[in-house]
Length: 232
Image (tube, rainbow, N blue to C red):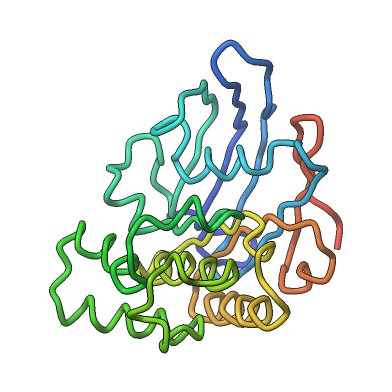
C-alpha cells in the first residue's frame, strides 16, 4: 500500500491516465490524480469536460460495462484496478451519479439497499445492521418500506447514497450528487462526507457549485482533457 506525503494511505491513484471512446477523440490526456484516506478531493471543470467519464473510468465502470480505450494505470488502495475482481471493486468503491432515477432498480427502499449485500452473501444480521445504519446516516429511516417510485428526487438520491454506504466502501465517488438535493439534503450529505473522512474513508467529489466545495480539502480542475491540481 502506497502512502502520500503526510503518511496517509493513498486510496485512489491515477497515473498517466488517458481515455477515448471507440473511434472517438482523446477525452482524457495523461491524467495524474490521487485521493488519500481521510480527505475529500473535489473535481471541477466546465460542463462537458469529461468529469463524469473520468469518474466512470476511475470506478472501473469503463471499460468493464462501457467500452473504451484506457491507457495508464489506476491503483485502488495500492492494487491495480484493471486486474481486480468485480466483487472487490464494488466492496471498495461507492459511486453515486447526478441522476437518481438511473441508479434505483428495486420497488422499495429496503430492497434497494439489500441488493448489493445479498449479492455478496452477507449474513442477515449483518445486512440488517448495515441497512439500518445507512438509512440513519441519510435520514431516511422512516422511508425503509416506501416504494422508491413514490420518493421525491432528493429522497431518491439519498436512497442511492444509502445503498452505497451500506456496502461500507473505502472510497466514495460522488458525481454531482448534490444536484437533486434541497438545502437540508445537501447539509446531510456534507455531514456524511465529514463523518466518512473522519472514519478514514476517501471521497472524490465532482461539483461546480462553490457553496458545496467547502467540504473539500483539495481540488483538481479538468479542461481540454488535462487535469491540474488547484492551489489552495
